Amino acid sequence: MMWLVTLLLLWAPHLTEPLNISADKGASSVTLNQSQTLAENFTSVRNHKTLVMGRGQEVCTIPCDLTAKMIRDEKHSICGQLQQSLSSYVRSTSKLIRDMMEEQHRALEFLTSQVTELVTKVHTLKSEVQQSNREMFSIKPVQAHGRDCSDIKETLGSIVPKTPSGIYIIHPDNTDTPFEVFCEMDYMGGGWTVMQRRTDGQIDFRRPWTDYEDGFGHLPGEHWLGLRKVFHVINQRDARFQLHIALVSHDDTTAYASYDDFRLDNETNFYSIHLGRYAGSAGDAFRGYNQEQNQDTAPFSTLDVDNDGCSPFCFLNNQTVESCSLQNHRSGWWFNRCGLANLNTPPPDLERSRRETEGTGQEKKRKRTVGHTEEGDKERSGGDESSGGHKESSGGDKETSEGDKESTSGEGEEDRRDKGRGHLHWDTWTQNGVPHYIKSVTMEIRRIPTNN
Ligand SMILES: [Ca+2]
Image (cartoon, rainbow, N blue to C red; front, side, top):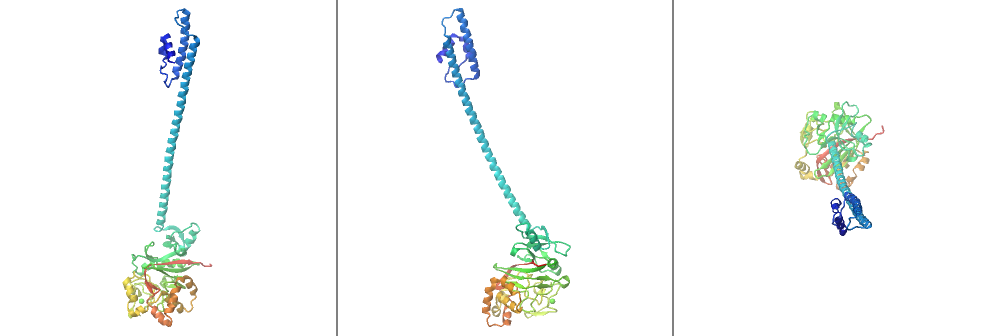
């Protein structure tokens, strides 16, 4: 190729400028304009040659076929270079597009991960909000009206899979104003309206009559719902209620007392209590061991409204007692003379209770279990039909009762009652010979299904 170009330059020096073909054979690129210029020059050479030959002054001539071959070769070379350049361009363009697509793919993956992370955060926040709402339920009243917690449990139970415990607004029959109560929706099937709860001793239960009638304390924690509200709940149309008392000792032992019917008289009769059949593991302290201790049918008393059985006074433990409320740290309860049940006294002083229970050697001999007490109750009730429900509910205490029967064999009923006296107080109960001092207590009521 080099010699061909040199030859052309010698023959037509004026063509060097417009032709301007690189002498470097290894040049990698030739533009399309250069190709056009070359074609024009080729035409110019042919014309020039014809002109020179026409004058007859040519010193040397180049055959036309050789010139044509040279031009063809040159064109072939240029076309090859163009094709190579085009292929290179296509390859580079493809690579560029591929790189761009990969970059977009990476960006898309990044965005996808960001979206996934955001979705995860949203779910987390949603669950936190739901958890917060559940916690709020235990503080703020739920705007679910029902006649009582049993009614709400039944109504909501058909709508939501789980009804949470918490404060609900109830509107019992024959009342003008709805009010708030704490509904225990988990314990023993739920539907319980809590009428009293003591857990930490933060609420002072040494209160006058008006407080016990209207209620006091905080519904989520310690409180007394109030005699008037309880009366409204249990005196509804076609409704019967049971009373359940759950006790927890300082060593976290649990016991309970249940009455299958629970009623209160109205205010005029000072909310006298009426109890049905007993079942449980804590002993029937409400009825005690004899009629004097029996608090069933007793009116409610406080320090300022004395309705107890000590009228004008009675002798208890060689003491003259005029006011059972005063005798029981100014608390309110259904006192008789005065009785063995009172869950509204101040938190028991553990050492004091221990001294009272175990004080003298003779008193130590009197230590008996709750099972013994229950046995005495059954005997006293003269074949009370409650034994059926009792057996069913206190199966876990059967062993205790049998143990007591053995330990008290040969003793008379009066002896057993006498020895059991003083150990059925609901500031402590005895199980397997071990006294348990009450740490917390809950009194709650629930509807009993009726055929009406
Ligand atoms: Ca009195």
